[in-house]
Length: 201
Image 1: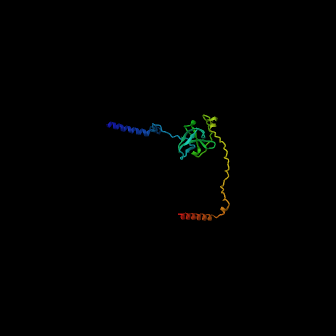
Image 2: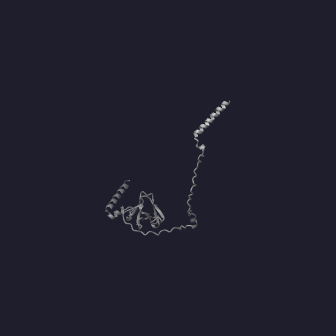
Image 3: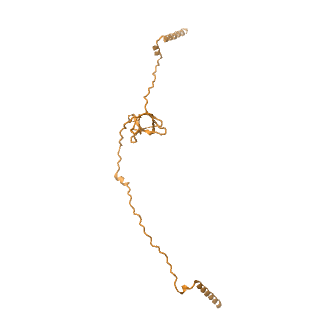
């Protein structure tokens, strides 16, 4: 046991002596790590677009216009490197790995662009539709509604109004007799006949 501890002590002394006596380059060899150190490589800074936070999501298209197919979406706050712009500046070309060629277009009013100047990029050709819509003239004629002219109703005047006419009383001596006198005569005749029948009983 005593021999092991003395040998260990001698070994430590030798290592310390060699460490101080070796050149600096040799000491660095002993200090180098055995694993590779990751290095951070930066990409050159460029213009970046940022989607407005008030948008639910925005469409990413294959060209600068709604006639081009949609190739993906960007979410609120999402960023992408900007590469160019359309002639009027309404569409911005961005790096988008999901699109053909790794680039796509976004509508500029929906994003913020970092300060800087974007070059004007020639847009891709407008895609041709897979089919050309045609209208069957026979079928279209069935839906054409022609208004039939109607004549206005003619006004028929009403027949003349017939007013009732009353015959005037006959002229003669009876008509000239006062009505009160006729009543008195009839009443007197009735009284006279009543008295006469009473006397006969």
